[in-house]
Image 1: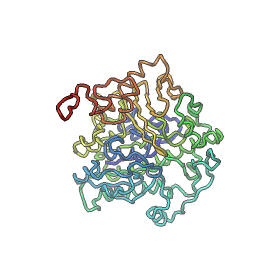
Image 2: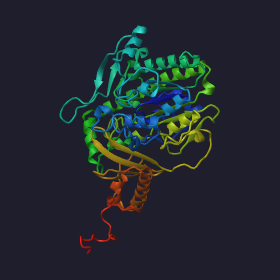
Image 3: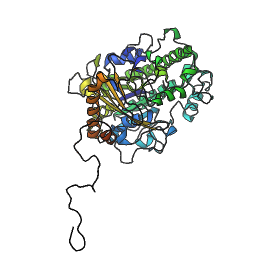
Image 4: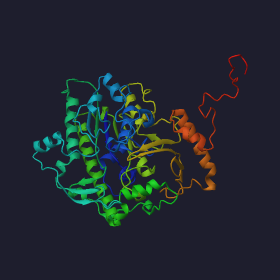
Length: 500
C-alpha cells in the first residue's frame, strides 16, 4: 500500500476536481485509474486531531488528541497507550511500515514508536534544519535554504502577521518536497527488494507532504508559475460576518486579510497553485518508481489531505473555528488493483474511512476502527447503503472552541455553544455567506437537522449532546438532570422512632 497525503489542501486546486488552470497530471491520472470521491470530508479541520483519526479510525472526541501541540491550551498531547492504531495491526500481520514526511501525531511518541521507519520530522511545517535533510543537500551538492520576498499582513496590535509566502532560493531538487519524494523512492526500493531484512513481506508506505500548507515557500519556477490574473477570487471574499460568530471576524484580523491589497490575495492563490503543482510532480516521481519496480498491479494507492485551506475565502487564511467547505471538504482518491477505473462516487466519506480501508486491504478486521468504514465496496463499484450526511467536530486551537457540524446534501448546521448557531442552504448559497439559522422559512429544516445531530451525537457517545439537551427543542428519553438524589416517588426518610 502507498498512502500519499498533503496538508491543508483545497479540493478546487486539482484538475480532477475541475480546476482548469492548475497542472496536476499525476493526481489526475491516479483519479482516472481509480476512484474519485467527490464528497470527502475531514472529521476536524486541524492537523493533529485529523491525523490521529486517520491513525486510529476514531473520531477526535473519542481518541482525545484534540489540538496541535504548538497552540495547545491544556488538551492531551499524545494518544493513550492502549489506543488501537492501524499501524499496530499491520505490524502484527508482518507488514513493513514506512513514513516519510509530516507526523504531527503527538509529542511523547514519534512515528517510530508506532513501527514506522523513516526520519523523525517533527512539527507543522518543513523542518529545513533537520539533520537528514541537511545530509541530503550535502549528498547531492545542493545549496541550503534561503528565502526573500516575504508576504504577510499586519496584526491588530501593529506587529507583522504570520508569513504567508516567500521566494525560495534553491533549485527544485533542493526543495523539501523533492527530498521527501527521493527518500520515499529509496524506501520503495528497499521494501521491494527485500533489503529491510523482511524479504517478501508486504509494505505500507506513507508520504506525508507538509505542503501546500502555508507559508508557501517556493523556487521562482513555481512561485511565478501561474499568472495572478488567472485567479478568480472566491465570492466569499465579500464576507461581512453579519449574523456569524464574532470569532470569525477576529480570525480574519489575526490573519490580517484586510491589511493586504487584493492583488496580494490573487498572488497568494497563484503561488498556492504553484505549490500544488510542485507536489504533484513529486508524487509523479513516486508513482513512476512504483511502476518501474513492477509493483503497479499489486499496490493500492490512496491520496488525501488532513483538511483544506482558506486562501482568502471568507477573508481568512489557514483554518480555524469556522466550519466552511473550504477547510472541511478534502480530496480523496483511491486506486485498487482490479477495481474499476475512472469512477466518481458522491457518497459522504471521511478521512477516517481510509483507516478501515487500509485494514481491509491488509486482510485485517476493520471493526476496531470504530468510526471508520471501508471504502473498498465503493471503489469496487458496489452500491451499499450509505449515510446521507457527514458529522464533524472542532475543539479549538489558540483557545478552546467547541463546535459540531452536520452536513447533508443541501444543508449544513453548525452548533456554536458560545455564539450564533449557523445554518446554510448550500444549493442557493454555495459560498456560505448567508446564515439562515434564524430565518423562519427554514425553521422546519433547522428542527430536523438539530434533532438528527442530537441523536447522532448520543449514538456516538459524544457528550456534546448534553449541551443541546436543555438548550434546544430536542426529544429526550432519559433523566436530563442526571440526578440520583431527586426521586419523586421515594419514601420520605424515617426518624429514629420510626415515624415519618
